[in-house]
Image 1 (tube, rainbow, N blue to C red):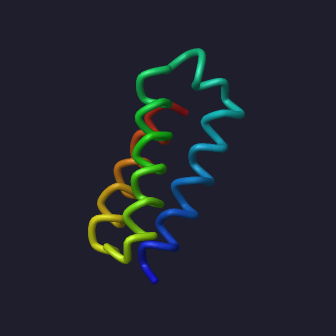
Image 2 (cartoon, one colour):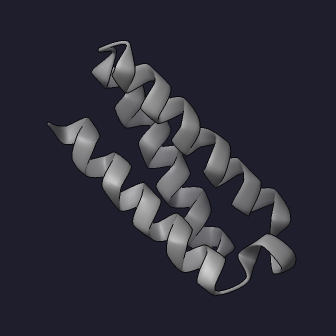
Length: 67
C-alpha cells in the first residue's frame, strides 16, 4: 500500500526532525508534521487511502522543512 509506505516515511522524517531538535527550532513545522501524520493514520484506519496519502505527504514535507 502506498499510504502505509508514506506513513512510515513521514514517521521516519518526523523522528529525524525530533533528533535535530526541530520541536525547539521550528515548532510550527514540527507540530504540523505531527498533526498531519496523526490525521494520515486516522484516515488510513477508515480505509480512506487516497486522503491518507495526501496527509502523509504533507507530514513528510513539513518534517523535512523542520529538520
